[in-house]
Image (cartoon, rainbow, N blue to C red; front, top):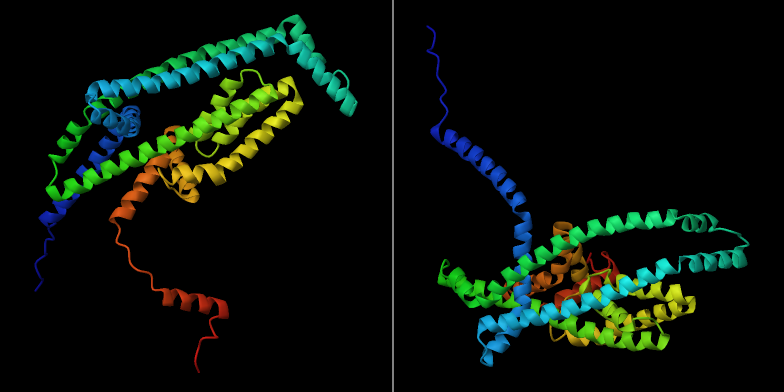
Amino acid sequence: MTEPATHHTIPPWVRRAVVTLMAGLAGLWVLRGVVSSLRPLLLVLLVSFFVSFALEPAVNRLERVGLRRGPGTALVMLAVVGALGGFGVQVGSLLAEQVTDFSENVPRYLEDIDGWLEDSFGIQNATADLRADYDTGALAQRLGDVADDLARFGTTVANVLFQLFTIGLFTFYLVAEGPKLRRLVCSFLAERHQRHVLEVWDLAIEKTGGYILSRSILALGSSLVHWAAFELIGLPSSLALALWVGVMSQFVPVVGTYIAGALPLVIALLGNPADGLWVIVVVAVYQQFENYLLAPRITSHTMQLHVAVAFGAVIAGSAILGVVGALLALPAAATIQSVIAAEAERHEVAEHLIAESSQRRGHGPSDGQEH
């Protein structure tokens, strides 16, 4: 007698799990597309938040002396825009002057290079082709092509200015309406979570503001020292060059010092190679003075961050968000470090265990064994 065939039915929970999984995957795919489309806006909001954290301490001080939050925010932002505008005018006029001077003195530079190559290596007429191009106008045509590139660069600058305007607008509202925004966020959270959110928010403001303050103080000191040094060396536009060195060396992570020193070095070499050597000496000596004496004293009161942590944070930030991530990496790392230090449970170190471990490493694994 044959047994009746059994019918295997899929349990309902399996169907629900499959449907839920497919819906979740579809939702993630849609969310990825939305985030990708909104990435420029999200970057603007992220930068605006960090800028608002940097400006809020100054606005809070103005509010404590009686200035309403809206006008105080406008005043602080105008001061920042004025400082950035002054820096841009100084550096822009310097670059325009140097480009004009270079284009007018191309024949002299080519002759100097020819003379140096002939005296040093016996090479004659090494720049003859370039001089022929300059005399026939071919070099001017190449410079015209460069001008076209500069025009396209101008379009890029216009886009950047629009982005900066958008960041400024968001930053103004984030700072001016900061207390209301915190109250709104906390209204969606239970009381036990509100404390943590407000603590993290305050830490972000403290660390970002401390970072900007310490960098600004160091930039001011660097600019003053390099201004005096460049005046003694005799470099043209010494104030603009000093501002360039001060700002770039402090606010561009990792490679800022090299970018800062490159411009005055090139300008010095165009005038007198010996001046270039003095520029290298000044930048290198001041960098050592700043790294070992000045910066530790200032950052100890504002933002303490281990060099290895800072370097890793910059690499991670640049890998995630490019230049924006590199610029925001240090205050973000300082905030995360402070949150971990505040929330993590710390225990007393058992010194006898450390001593025993060191002794075992010093005498080898077999010395401490008993037979």
